[in-house]
Length: 375
Ligand code: MRU
Image 1 (cartoon, protein in one colour):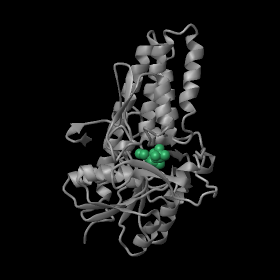
Image 2 (cartoon, protein in one colour):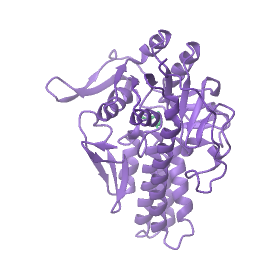
Image 3 (tube, rainbow, N blue to C red):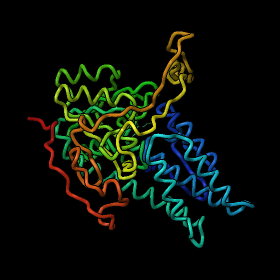
Image 4 (cartoon, helix red, strand yellow):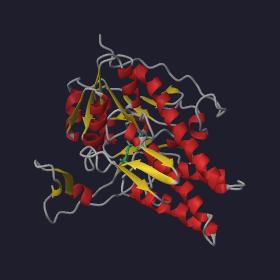
């Protein structure tokens, strides 16, 4: 994606350093953070300088590649690497992509003649394949977004949440790119406001018409027939198709079912987890109460301030994700097509790589109508 005319990925590795677009500073400032070693990259994941499942996965893969380079200078490289892996895996528990990225680099380096070089190569390949998977999600999903469609999305599952293109927003960008008129309702996504801050910024930069809505407004808009389809991303999809995504996704799915609005989940291969039978088996990250108590943004003079928005002395609870049962999902938008619950090909769970690269059965998907098509 382009920022002020310059093409960017969300995360990349160059000269041994990992570079990340600082998502905590957006939309009020655009800055790139440079992480010289794996500890700094792991901290960037923990502090959500980089966030969104596929972006976290690439950052984790790069972090482990950095650790392999560092380990070569250590007296006990094996212990160093084991500790580095645990440090990276301990940053955020929910997104499957993080573990996928680490496992893939670990496997590539194990037994390689030059483990450090193999690790970097594997991490770069993962990032490239992640970009291609998201591009394909966009190409398949664009058919669901009709001319004039009003799409509702939750959190940020745009290009900032991935290495490039996005998952939930990839079909929107592809549809707009093919000349369709699309309007996006952007859920604010409290408490961290990934929708209000990141999705709105992305769509604005891409010239896509949109409006931010309070999370509580979505049901009302659906009840009035002002939403043609919902598309969200995922942090992990269990073997039975249950979807773990940003807290608030479940409420959208239930409302969408009630009001007859199609509910799609856009998922790259790195997010599927066949080892967990169903959603309740997926670990849900609980984050600091302070994210509920405080909001951060510029005042009228442009000074960024943190202000309290809850009653002093009140406790808060902050689960970062929720579980949407597969029965609420109309279809999964994948790199190999759009599939109804129960029809996901096994290759979604077992393969990695883009279609045509020998990763097994890549079906054509179920033909879904474009719900937002103007009459
Ligand atoms: O806590 P975050 O901001 O990392 O959560 C992100 C989400 O929940 C996204 O919807 C999900 O990772 C899909 S991103 C393509």
